[in-house]
Image (cartoon, each protein chain N blue to C red):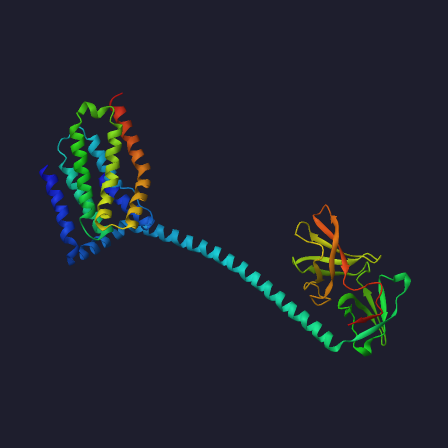
Amino acid sequence: MLLLLLWLGQDLLTVLTGGGMQIPGLFMLGLTYRLLVDEGSEDSLWAIWAAFAGGILWDLRWVGIPGFFTLGYVVVVLIVIQVWRVIPPQGRESGTSLIVFVLMEVSQIVPPLVPVLVLGGSIGWSYFLMQQVYSLPAILFCMYVYLRKVRSNNP
Amino acid sequence: MVHGLTALILALFLLGVSSGLGIVKNIVDLWGSLLFIPEYPAVVLRGIYINWRSRSQNVEWLNSEVTRLRNENAALRLELAKLGGEKVFASADKEARTARVTLRAPMSWWSEIRIDRGEHDNITQGLPVFSRGYLVGRVSSVSAMSSWAELITSPSFMIPAVIEETRELGVVAGDGTGAVVLRYVPAGRGVRVGMKVSTAMIGEQLPPGLPIGTIAGEFGTGADGYATYRVEPGADMSGFYTVSY
């Protein structure tokens, strides 16, 4: 439900700015956050297909060609799952701020990078860089929420 | 892992084939129309923002346009006034009407003169009189055969004037002792000695552009921020025997 709201929020913000400002990938931030905090669950199938669905819907709404963001979203989820599996559960609870930041950053870099790499163009690159700048506050906010949650779980 | 790979392959497959499928367009349209309802508030908000921005831009544009038109209008008025002034000079030159100074009383030496032209010669009250092409005064009273003209050196003679080079306005007045001053010019406007002074178009009594003289020096600036300048009349105020009108 939260992911649906985040997807819709991202969509509404994009409508509101008329495409003039690159909105942070709220949906993928939320999905990454969920993957990071769901420590007990080893089954991450939901995340793969949620990313697939979210990506295809985003492509249908804003790109017109399904596949670009679908591919990016699925790749991000696979990266997050694999990296998170490598770290032992004890290690996830402490000293992972940098890894969490990197994973969240990956969730913002990879999806918009796919259309830029496929279609190319200097405008595409400038839009991509703009989005990275706008994404940073959202990533930091997510980090803050994540760290608070970790601390409250391990006082 | 299998699911991950399946999703990846599906995404790549979609990317490869969907651009050529006509049905994708229909799905895109359908999805867009379905999202219209939840997106409606954002669309309305964006419309309000765009309206507000275009309105403020319009106001800005209108303001700049008003300023531009005002400047243009002022420039045109100036041109018109110059043309009017040129017409006055041209008609004056053409007619070349001259009057002889018949009386200049020592008691009112710097204030008035009497000339030998009157109503019969179409002299009217307020008519400017010149010497060597420069304004020396204006007709203050008219009788049948003669008229009195108040000189620019008279203390009661006050007319709006303009410094031609800077377009600064002021009031030209006499002091009753042979000097002519230009008052009420805002200080620090780059007024220099030698700049030309002529009648201003804001004056109702005299046509604009009639040459009076040149700036000869500055008396000083008052506490009110306005400077007073000494004006050197173009005409020889103590030695003319005839005037033209």
